[in-house]
Image (cartoon, rainbow, N blue to C red):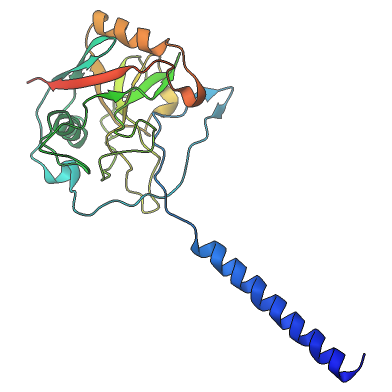
Length: 244
């Protein structure tokens, strides 16, 4: 190879390295932060648990969540759904932050991202995830499992209450953040069987109060579902009324 050929080969090699480095840098810079998928626990089947997303989430600092609100002492609520009413007993002494959050999102007194004119978050939402023999999940303003109120707050799992019975009302979450803080938002679930593998992972803040309400929960839990456990026919949480 003569001197001219060697110079040409070297130039082409350098150009190839620069192009490759530029492509790699561009790929890294194009990644976006996405929301976390919140799950009402992970269903245990043959010792295996459902996979859940571990993607990051950007939380607006302007929303304080329940920690910045006056504590609610509400002890009951009624979920008005397209399948009938579900009356629940709330546990404000055992889960004060969570009950304050639930009550505030139900009546609109707790600010949330996208709120207009004090509207409640729990209004015309769907049960977006339903698993027969496990639980029903709702409370997502997006209806996808990826939405929330625009803030997060910690678990309250030290009350001693466990998932040793069905018809418990609990918070869905996406595990813990890297700093150990909780990922609770607006999504909640109601169990239809004992789910003790969820102990210590999800805040229990209420229970279904009566047989008529349990029948409504059972009817929702056995509805036909499609991909990602979403009901074929929308089951709507029309509103939530908070009692004393």
